[in-house]
Length: 450
Picture 1 (cartoon, helix red, strand yellow):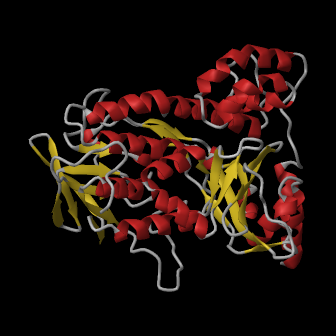
Picture 2 (cartoon, one colour):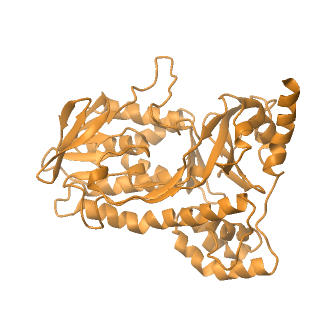
Picture 3 (spheres, helix red, strand yellow):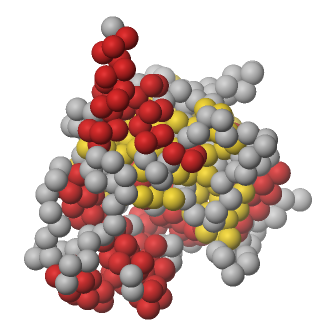
């Protein structure tokens, strides 16, 4: 007999639940609902992996891009579905542990297709889950209550509706207030590598992020001796046209000291083409038209439909999956206004990170364009975190923020001390050649070839 969800006794009644969107958040939610005794229908446009295992996620721009499965995600999975974590590890995912603190997981390193496949297969094996490939066109409402959705002209009825669609979806927009925020102004270019058998794979407990003079670079470990190498540039940078080419990207990452060792083809075999992530946003939205006003009874929004963040810091899933856990833990409490509870949790835990991204990404973009950092304006968190390298006594404050164990407000106590450091001549470190220099050789080679 399958156990009930954490902290739940026998169900009083069975609810028909509809989960729209089968990304990591939607599938996590569907499994949790089913294991609490609900009958769940999952709707997603993507038919799933091909028979040969290849999988290009329909409508998911970031399907192959680097993902951070921070410790918050792992803990929520362990609480809800430890079998999923065990299977992921058996299939090559690696848990990073804090040095000197065994058991404190910093992240799970795995490519998104692996995580999504294991979640999908787990959900489809649940006896209470029905999986349907299709497009949710609109929601069905009756007397202010969600009753389901129209899927490819066919009504699908439910007592509870969860919208966990991607960042491009507009499902239910008419029931909600305005979106706060907008574009973050940057794009990223990346490729995935597999370390050859004779070499040591990336085994650090953290990804590696370095700021260059007018760009940033990231090395993100993944499963089965793979890792991603990524460059982040302003979306309007003319160099992007070259960096997004195979030759341009390979030459550029070989010229950046941070990424060169991890893109050396003698040691690490490229296993994907060069790909681009664009139209990145920092947005935030309440459940309904205003705080405390639900969009409709029995209708809940999760994931990117609540908040999108620039993915470079890997914070989105660390917020979205615990947010979904709030829904699961309270969905059976008839006395709880679940829509309000989700908004209150988001206001406390998600909005501060969104605001931090708006401030920090705006500052970083200006610096990418050559503007100096001003101590007369609110200091972005990346500068405060960087100051820990010269003020190790600040790490008890910086460390919890970097690991998202405390919100960005914890850094407020360091804003003036860091501003004084800047006044005294300290500057956040940058590494590598300028962006134009990264592509100059490639442009010359391309011109010669023509």
